[in-house]
Image (tube, rainbow, N blue to C red):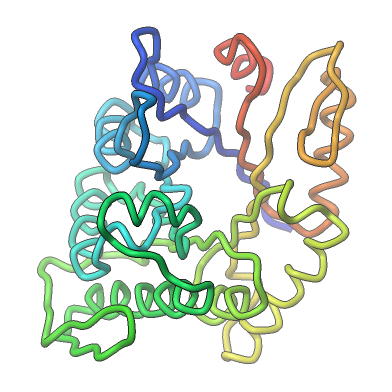
Length: 279
């Protein structure tokens, strides 16, 4: 059995007291394997753009991997993203995890003039994005005539000197099948994929991998969890909470669902203290 990986969310808030880079440095010191940033660009609340922030974090750390959790495909053309990803991975010494999703908030895309997509169009676009990115990373010119995206002999150089992992945040059956066929990791959220549902979803991902001729063990299964280590708090269907012993017991149960990694979103007041306790 592989050793479990542990990741930590860094807040995207750009408020006066926010220090996501300092938090990432401390996460590295505490032994976390990766940090991640979400991808919501629209709104009045001050926030950072995740790609720029993760590049800054990568430059300020030495071992910690940086993950997008997850980039909304409609925001960035996959061919451009392939180039961006290769550059960040190379400059960071091979530490990028490229997380992608079909895009959740239609309001965000409409406000940026990108239009709205149906659930089917989002899954189609996600699959096309993975194929375009992987195709460009191969070094060969690619011509893609898709529904969501097109390329006409696109090519990039240099190409990655190792396999940059792509993790997908997916839930519906078609999207889970795409994950099994094409992705290196699956990162669902506890609230949307509780254990009783996650078991079946996991099996669908792994079955799709096997059907595509892939080794299911090559897929990293990451549970995305709101978490709070606090003796006065209690777990709910959406949040892992309680004393250290209670939290550890709950996490062990979630690993038994079949996940090989945990990603924490610390909640409540005192995020820095939560990070220390989790570490």
